[in-house]
Length: 226
Image 1 (cartoon, rainbow, N blue to C red):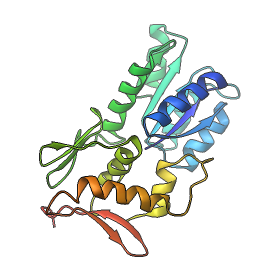
Image 2 (image 1 turned 180 degrees about the vertical axis):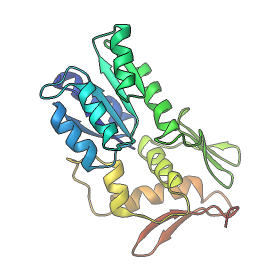
Image 3 (image 1 turned 30 degrees about the vertical axis):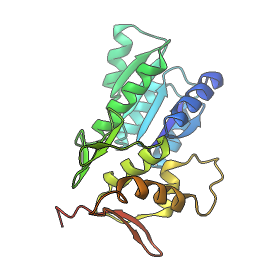
């Protein structure tokens, strides 16, 4: 899952970047309104974290502009202004949630999970393929009733594949979605993570769900829907 953080306080931005990367998210920073708006419109993001007090263009104006240009990504507003009027203004601008500063990282992460679970069009709370179930909000995955012990990056990879169930996902798509723009991604890193994930979700079970399409990419197949 890829998140854009638009926050002009570079210390806070760096703190959010580390906390979210530790959860397995890919994170891109922007430090003013115009650049944040441009990045949100030029790349597909699963979530936008948007400060209100931004140089160049405030968060309310950025939020309105993104919605007018049909950006459907969930938007979480962060601000030190905690009046009812500002909350209403933020939500009326098109934001999906509003979190006043200062905040606890645990609450921020919970709100992010809830927004990602909802998705841009009210997607299902759980993602499934046969007896494989992933709950983004609870950050839990199981197969045949057995909990799967996944790393943050493995969980993010499985979630991405399940959100594109029965569709071909290329290596480039995985790289773009799971790694940060400034990360140096070695050529076989996606293959490595796919092998690790397959060892946990497929190898112990008779029915295999994760396919490698030679020369193209990967796909989660649901035999119950084939």
